[in-house]
Image (tube, rainbow over all chains, first blue to last red; front, side, top):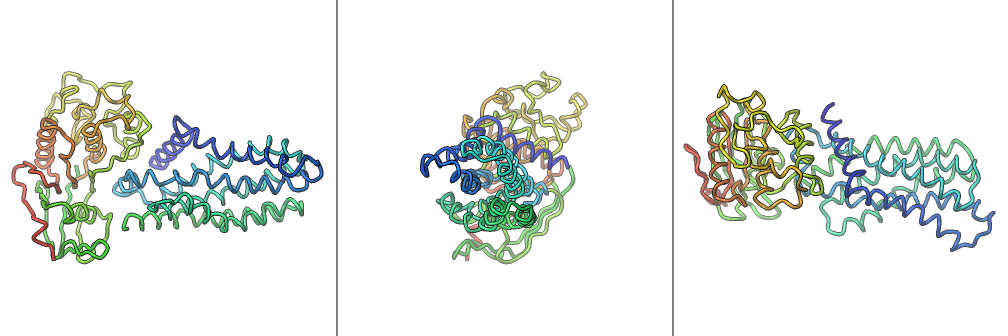
Length: 219
Length: 230
């Protein structure tokens, strides 16, 4: 248990403290920037913004989740952190599971907070904002899980960052369909399905990520 | 320190399309050391990674009991953090205190030389405070005490090496795999580290040293990896 606490403390320290802070803030700023630019691009008609704004928030969240991927695991693999942990009997799966939690904490809740000013910029009403927030709560763990597995798979590749984006987008489509779909149907069913997909992804991610790290070690 | 043992039976290693070595066998008991010598590219590092269990041998088996520590060319510390903070993570993982707290200096400042790498005292010396006992090395022994506030990325090659030595086996694993341990160390620090390894062996440790430089530890066997090339 103390190992989990030490890992989580380190991961969160790297994401929120010192030099890591700017890189953690970047996806959030990107997210707000998309919401800000959208009315300039399509025009300020309130009914259009209200109808499409929720979907734009979702697309912005999905694209923002690509930004932190290149620095999520690559440096630790390069420095041999996972090797040293492995020699101390810490399974790769455990290290990845803790990283998943830290990664979600560094981008899920900040995105949900940023969704409030984004909703104001897009003129979304309270009900829509509530659906967006619930959808993000259900969907961002899944996005974090997909991102982490992709980061683990592309860890040894040159230009992995560009590849990450291309890989994440198709895999995130189910989350987008149900999460953003809940906006048009207004139903809790979409959010529940988003949550279900997220749970499956979160359950798979530590094992897939751990296997990818091991494969990179052998390679 | 828990006694370890290490044996290799008919090991072969292939990287990509190249067979690096084959038919390699040896066995080591507590207190024994082996130097793996050979030119660059003969598979010294790969052999150590196989012995550590990080790499699967292409053929053959590795028998290992006890904990294993690996020192290689990488430094598993976060570059942006001050050295003390970066080391504290490994203190927490290992569940021991190797003196990386700048705020709480180790007791007995007159003891192991401050700022100068020296041979750690024998573990049963009664004057030593208890946290020193059985520890392979500590911040002060390696001359890192004055660097705890310095971000890891500003450390020199030799200082990075000393930090890597510290975090690789502060927990006292019975088997210590050393990949080019003298690279980057100056003559004094290198001699000090060789004495430290000799002391580690005398306390029942096993050391496997992959190095193209001479590594002077009494009773160390030597294995020319080139002899096992296909």
